[in-house]
Amino acid sequence: MEQELTLRDADEALVLLGSRDRNLRLIRRRYGVNVSARDHCLRLEGEDEAVEGATKLMRGLLEEIRKGSLSTQGDVEEAIDLASRQNGPEPGQCSGMELRTPMQRRYIQAVRSKDL
Image (cartoon, rainbow, N blue to C red; front, side, top):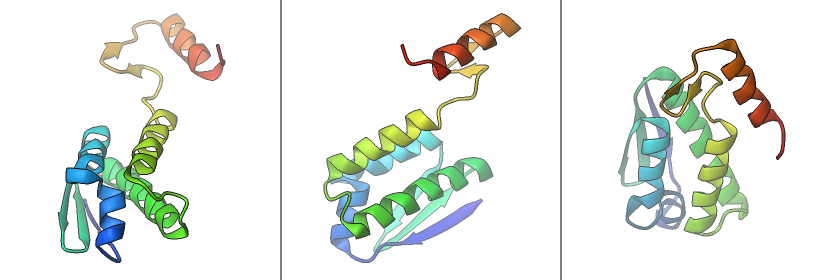
């Protein structure tokens, strides 16, 4: 799947993409998509679900940048981290660990749903 987003200007691109494309690399790693930036156009490519998630995130970030809610590269990085935590792996897909029993799944669900 492939999606394109258009940026208004260089200032918007700098805030969204980050210094030396730092935020862009973060999105690539978190969503597993290929993202390329040319002029004022961003192109996202990859698996359907990953591209949809990354596109949704980037559209949301652009909306907040245009409203003035996110005005620095650090704000955008923080928003990406927050979105990643909220959309973390499903129970049973816990960062490289395979859950083998129903009890392990219930335990992970309980940990995620309860504030410690």
